[in-house]
Length: 351
Image 1 (spheres, rainbow, N blue to C red):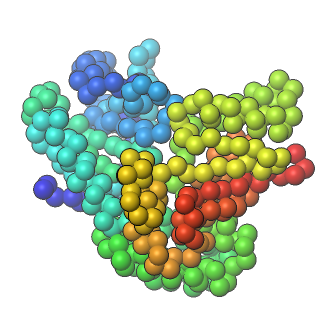
Image 2 (image 1 turned 90 degrees about the vertical axis):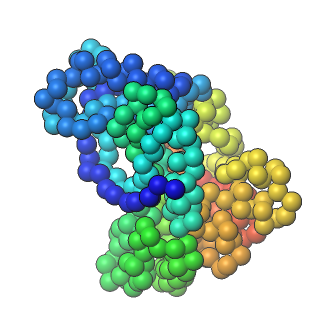
Image 3 (image 1 turned 90 degrees about the horizontal axis):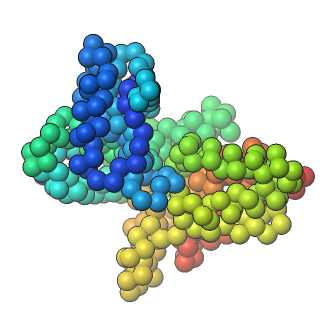
């Protein structure tokens, strides 16, 4: 297996195009056109492909493809794109395009074994895709910075001295930390948080560590909500309009239900096929859980407070949509032995 390594990328400006990719062979003609249109003296490296894992696309995959440039460039066909600052795990694939799936399997498997999870987009550096049987691609898994967010949020909520105590040995965690050690360090930190913070503080700290929901998707929710209010609909009617949109759009999987000022929602299984075939409650729970830190350790004593991280997924959606603070309650948690992770999003009563 090729070496898997970690690296970082500063925020980078690209000149390129955002489009829906249906098959890999469609990349080559776009690259040819980009190379012809972008002044050669602006280009600073090989082309970069950004793959969006969550989007409203029903057929194909939303991607951004462009060349890194030393100053913005755009014309009628090319736009300025941005690759955000990232920390990543990567693998070099050299061989047929068809073999890229195996490389990704190795990459994500390695991340899983360490309890690391990807953010909601991937990156490829396309060194050479001129020959489908002999290509050269660096595939990157963008690492979600849970540790950094936990430190930032505990300091914001509890203040620096108490945050230092709660964070504790988490400072030792790196991308190379094994799953068992990572689990124990995170569990100890959550236990310290439970001992020193009240219910809302625990929620505020840990929900802020959730995956960063794609800003473009949140913007669609916000546009739907504000469009409804501009039509004269009230707050709750506008919320219903957002729920209707989410139900019709592939960017959201589970249907939400509003009951008064509360929205009931759940996370569907991470691996639905394995979930449906599972023969034991433990196998079913592991297939349902999205978090690689706990999915094989659900009975090992992680405090349920940790599941506020999952609550943060819905907090981002609904605070982004409505523009007001919400409180997300955990109704069901795999950590507590429940069959699914289920949440209640409480909207402000004054609206």
